[in-house]
Every structure is written in structure tokens, then in C-alpha cells.
Image (cartoon, rainbow, N blue to C red; front, side, top):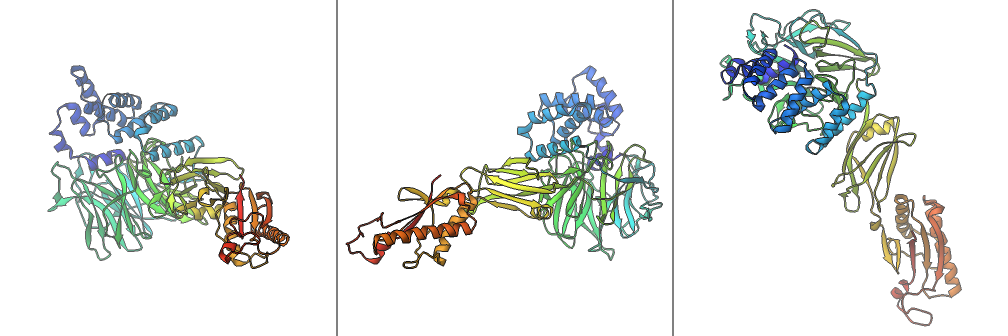
Length: 637
């Protein structure tokens, strides 16, 4: 029983019940997992009458199962042209067959033709991973060995348990009957000691979990809370329990350290498996085939309190889940590892790595590369270790050269697996209104000034960007009539930028300027120098800082400073005073970061441009004289 058959056999109706509902021999063979016989019968039936679209898809699936991808591709394409019956899961199979039987250009052309119907995340994920495959994304210096404990049957889902390894197997036990769809024993959880070299030589049935004559599988031991999580067949009074459609699904349970068992997730129509408990967040991750999935099986989590479920299942979303099957979540060093048979992989199931951004966002899942991944199914990846001492772990695969249908492999690595990427997600906002800004151009620029990525924010100012890791990155955000955000980060700063939402502020020029006396000026408040003085006092500095801020945000601004006095005092002395004040303002701006190239002139007019009737010889109240004492910082460009 290979892994694909395991997924199907765990999720579909028992064969005996299915066979009673089928209308042809081809259907019976197909739902009995006898794909070669199904093909022969469907071809015979095709000679007598036209097959239904459902049967054509069954025939395509049968070709897919036995590796005749070109024939499968033709059938998927034919049904896709003529009918809307094809599901997103079969759409993934269609793309898989195109990948295996055609060149990648044809696959990408087909994707572009369907892009309006596909999620942006799926298209981005595919483009990113195709570029990695083109650049020979191999795992360097990886050592892989087949465990001695593997059998000719099915051995998979490794899990660390203290100094031992837990895993699932269909090896025969007296307590287990034969599971008809696979022809092997119902799955059981086994335990074996880990040797110094990582090998597991012998194993026995794991005795801490209650006995069941049906499936027990995909264990996970949460050391922090001393709990076991695993899946098991739904039963009632010791026998298989079925839903109204005759389906037996898999429930998820938890075992306390005192031996008490509790069901956590149980639905007669839904299968749960591959639990993973994250002690940092208190989340319990798992795979399931809910109706809201993006394809086949998706990854979900529930919020828990020491393992007790406190929320409804939450789908990890289209950045992680695809039209294919996603299984086996595992979190290590801030990254989510999982397996998927999405079409842009190397073969069947591949292991992917996604960085966790904040609490609910994920970077583009990256195929961790050839070496660990192969053209076969590679799944159930677990890892431990450090950059200092190296990494080791286990995974399952049905690759060529194994002992059985699925084998468990041990691996060692000198560095963390998977391409390291730089991924940021956040929003570009106007700090004046605190609202998002749409259509801002964002660019990630490399150390040598090359543009690595360029996108625009959405209508609410949101964005997500990801590129392969660089030693230095400049993040730039620009939009016409807005200030520019541009900042350069070294590797330490890049690590920090990824840990939470990265917010960039762009100020609208219109919020910093005003119209005054027929001129466009920096919008500053009214201020006054001390009487007969040209020294920049605290009140003046507070307003001039607004001009400094405007130039910092808009370095291309060119300013003209003009200062005016009232008519009190001699006209010559007023002119000198106003010029001294203009020069003092210029000096303050220069000392606080404004470039000399930003200031084209500083001029004092004295009492030459009185705004009201308070000219020489006319009596005016003080507040009217004050209207004439003013400074304008004109924006001349």
C-alpha cells in the first residue's frame, strides 16, 4: 500500500459497500483500487457506449495511478474543455500530468490561461518554486539512510518520543485484522530505540496507547505537556462506525500521562490525521478533508489549552493549502514544514518549508529540494538539532530502492534545510489619516542596486513580498505626490523585519503644504521671534521642524524662505532684522538635515509687504501689527 492508496483508502467508503452502488465493472475495479483492470473494462465499455464524464475522470485517474501521465493528461483536458465537473483536486492532477508528460512552458501557459480562476497565492507559489527548480535547488551535504526496522509492508509517520522513534506500520499483529482496500493489516503504532547513528533496528507495538483492532496511526508526542496525539478509526461498541453514506473516517484522540483517553476531533464523515502540537502557541495542527478545503486534504489548527480544544478548526489558507493534498505539519525554528502533492513539485508528495510571519501569516512554501525530495512520495518530515551541531530527522518515502511500499528514512544535514527566503507582509499607510494607500509601488533592491522584486499594494494598502535570502536588502515604497520610504537592512535587520507586520508610512504632499498669499508653502503654524531678535527660540524651532520633516520625506523639494516684520521701527532696521531671521531659519534647517541644495534663497522683506492698513503713521492694535510679522517657506517646485 503506497501513500496515495493510503490517503484514498482512509477517506473513501469501504470497498464492499461501494461495489454495491456501481453501475459497471470499470467502476467496481476503480473503486476497488484495481486500476489496470479498471482501464481494461472502461476501454471495453467505451467501445459499446459513451462513458460519462465521471467515468472518463475515473479512467484518467486510473492512468494517473499507474504512471501513464500522457493518456491521463489527454482525458483530463478533454473533460475540462467540455464540462465543469472537474474538481480543483483533479485540476491539480491535470497540472501534475502536464508537468510529467509535457515541458514546463506548456504548464505555465495553461496556468496563465486559467489565471482569472486561480488564487493569486497559487500563481505566486508556482512561479517562485519553478524558479527554484530552474536554479537547481538541491540539499547540499545531506546523508540519507533506510532504517533497518523497515519491512516489505507500509512504514511511515515517524515521531520523536524521548530516546525512541514512534511510527505507523501495517506489519501484521495478532490483534489486527486485514484492511480490505490495502490487503494489509490495519495500521498500528510502533516504538523503536534510536541508535547513535540514527538507525532504528527493532520495534514493538507501542503499549501506552489503548488497544484497537482497527487503525491507529500518525502519532505525535508533545513533551512539554506529556500528551500523546494520534488518529484512530471511528468505532461504536468495539466495531467500525459509519456515517449515513456508509463511510468510516478517522478521529483524533489525546492520551493523558495517567492513561486517560479523550477524543479531540471526531466526525463520522471527516477524517483527521497527522496531529502536531505547538507548545509555543498552544495550537494543535492537523490535516483534514473538510468541505471547505482548497483541494484534497488541507492543513488546519485549533486553539487549545494544554491540548483541550478551545476553538473551531481554522484553515491555514491558500498560501499553504493548494488544489492538491497537504499533510504532516511540523514546526521547527519558526518555520512550518509540511508535505504536498501540488503540481509544481518534483514528483508526488514533496516536503515544503514556509516561514511563519506573525501569528497568522505564512511565507511562500518553498520546496526543500532534491536529495530529500524525489520523484516519488516524500512526507512525514520531522527534524531536530541546531546550526552549531547540525540537524537530523526522519521522513517516509516510497522512492525506488526501498524495502517496502513506504519506508522510513533517517537523514543528517549540516545546515537548516530549504532555501532561506526574506518575506515581509504588512501595509502602507498615511499617518495623517491612518488609512491604507493603494497602488504604492514597492521594490526590494539588492546590495548592488538590482531590483529583486517589484509589486503594487492592493486597494487597502496591503502587500506581501518574498525573495530568496540576500545579505542586504533595501525596501523602497513610492507613489506620486507621496513621500518615499527607503531603508536598508543587514541580515539582522531583515530577520527582525519578518517577525511582525511591516508597516510603512507615506505622507501625502498635500497634507504638508498650504496656499498662502498666492503661494504654495510648507504648512507650519504661526510663530514669533523674540522682540528685535533673530535667535531661533523653542516655539520657532517646533514649527521649523515641520519643514525639516517635509524635506526628509520629499528630498526633491526646493524651498524659498521669506520673512516679514511689521511697520513698527525703522524700515532699514526692520529689513536687516527680517534678513537675519531668514538666515537664522536657513541655518537651523541646514543644521537639522536639510541640504543646501534644498534652499534656493532666504530673503528678508522687512515692512515692504504689509498685509493690512498698519503702515507707518497709522495706529493699529498689537494683534493687527502681529498679522504682518510672518515667515513663509515657499515650495517653488
